[in-house]
Amino acid sequence: MLNKEEKNRFHELIDLYTGHWENYRNFDQWKKRRINQEIYKEKFVDVFEKEFSFFNKDRKILDLGSGMGGFLVALKLRGYDNIYGLEFDPNYCEITKLRAKKYDLEIPVKNCCAEKSSYSSDNFDIIISTDVIEHVQDPKECFKEIKRMLKSDGYCYLTNPNRYGFKDAHYKIYFINYFPKKIGQFFADLLTDRQGYVNKDNQKLTEMHYFTYWKIKKILRNIGFNFKDIKYERLLNSEKDYRLLKKIRLFNLFYFFYIRFYCCNFEWLIKKND
Image (tube, rainbow, N blue to C red; front, side):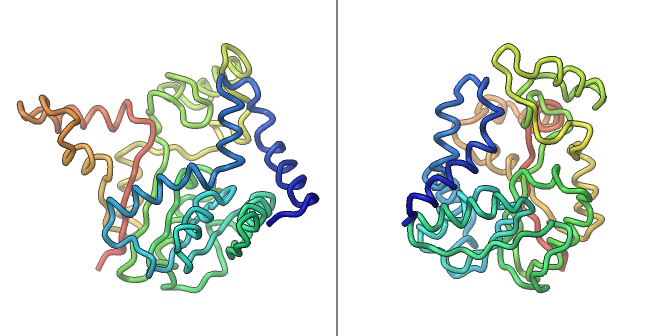
């Protein structure tokens, strides 16, 4: 449990990373989700357990870019003991440790960059990296590091934003990704703090790494990964979604345009080449 001083420190750090979102339409609810992130991240644990047969408590798991630690703590509360974090921001590392201490838990989190960690090679059965790759200095080096740390039969679950996504994942603004980055950044700055849009984001569009569907697949292939498009598999196998398109055999044509020019982010399951 946290003492009074630790509780105050926890909320001070949360405020540090949420205050600039105060013009967000649902700010109070959004901030509450950051404070109690481990509760809301339980659904992600449910999804992983349901969709991936290899995701179980016997696996050694790394959350690469573990942020405020909600997912790690949710895993620990579910009974996953062999879990680790890697996070570049030292304040996020502190938030994670305080979040875990609320439940009298300890979770090892290394404060280092994703391109060069001190974790040993062939170390992890599963690496989770959600919305991280766009923030690193060198995405290709980050992918190489994932490959180095991953066991030969291991899996990495990866998400990254679409260069031509209809709604930007960070600024929450529509259409700006259809423009060249500098023009998109101009509109992002223009709309910042207006019309209920969000903030001054920590990184500008011109500083982040957004890839097209074709480009990210090429990078993964060149690094030496096999990969599967999780969104495609999920929608294709769904009995509820796009039934008419499947019936008239137009689903693949629809998905071709949907994933390239509308979808906000990609989901990949990647594995080392044999």
